[in-house]
Image 1 (cartoon, rainbow, N blue to C red):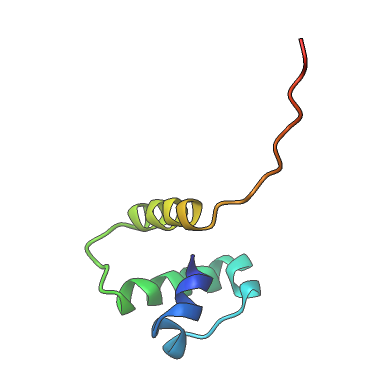
Image 2: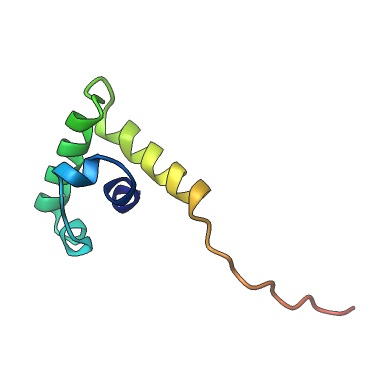
Length: 73
């Protein structure tokens, strides 16, 4: 979701980062802090923001899995 916000909002104009940054905890936390400040989310906890990003990503970027073959009885 952070990559989506970077690519599809003004957040990306001010906070450029690569996917590799998201794998480094200290850099990831700095990106989250910038996200919180940019979107004025200071009243929310990190956990609430994490849950939102996870649920939004799950909703908007669903993976399409092939249907499993059903066993015939």
